[in-house]
Amino acid sequence: MKLILFFVAAFLCGSFPTAYLVAKRLKGVDIRTKGSGNVGATNAFRVLGKGPGAFVFVIDFLKGALPAYAFARLSAPALDAYPETALLFGVAAILGHVFTPFLGFFLASFGVWLLVFCLTRMVSVSSLLAGTFLLVVCILTHQSHALLAIFTGLLAFILWTHRSNIARLITRSENKF
Image (cartoon, rainbow, N blue to C red):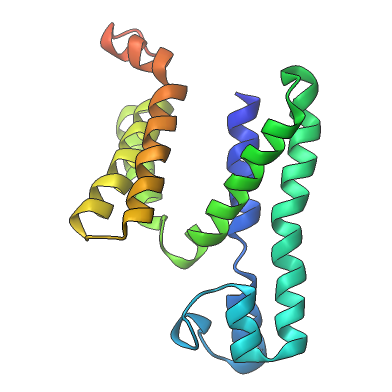
């Protein structure tokens, strides 16, 4: 459970939309509509200039490196797998950076999770359906193969981590929150 919580925390750290916020503050623009449309440091350099671009780069680097290091150190003694956990949390931060819920991408999925949770009071069912929702929307909206692969992998990860919950759901013995 600690591993999952740290994964989510690393994802949320990575989700901080640095370039978006800096562009809004400095120039009053939505960086997603300028340059390449990305909310990363390269586009910040392009749209905002060297100084703000460098600031965005440093913050974006830290929002990935710090969670990877800190959460891996906190969980590695129990797992005896520091390099692997650091990589896992680094990937979570990168996914958060690319698919930040703060700019709308995962808000619909979170809405599904929240609705299902309110109806069932089961975190496992909420997580399973929110992950499935992301993949289905990805397929229906004809997103890129890379995004399809990421969401397929994410759903596979959710299914694997919830395998004992799924067994309890089948036997109708899953606990409610």
